[in-house]
Length: 239
Image 1 (cartoon, one colour):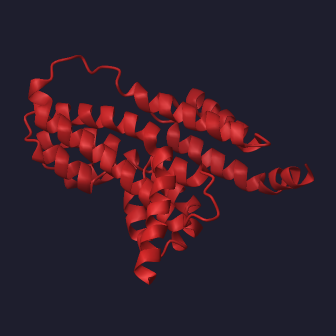
Image 2: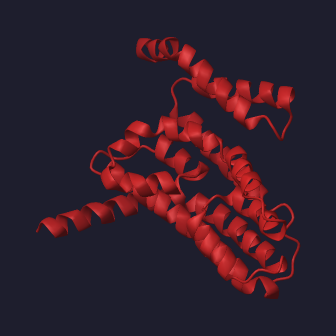
């Protein structure tokens, strides 16, 4: 009876999580397919994108890894480049500490599988009270991981058979994040935190350029939200 109840809890969480990941499915499938094709035309067997998407699961870094594999062996450069490309996950991880701590042993996979998209969903989704939060976050992460793995593997297998211009496909992810932001905006009664994020990002974009603004923008957003936390919370309570 206990096993049956546990199974029902997981199935319910999976059913609740899946609709949230449908936009990610479209973006990850296209980008993963592009990545697999890119690996194929660079001379790598489909095993490479398949295993890398399964074990690394960092889309930007996986594209960069192609050049690292083709270049000279330099582990220090690879380490520093990885830290620079994925430094934003430090901020994600800090904000998810309490939520992941409540997930029990599932937190180890949640930490490994955290990406921009899973963070956005797990952070903003309105999870029903009768759905287990830990399993919901687990299945969001697992489904997104599978979408990327599936697309990358297909691209690696059929890359040599597909001939079309893939330039511009990466914009799918930009469009997806715009949709996530708009949904978040509509669900908020007050938009102070969103406006702070937009303002800090725009200022850092002009100050540091398009290639270097992400980390300064995140630092600025964290600092501003920390300083203005009480006024924002008091404003929400007053309304």
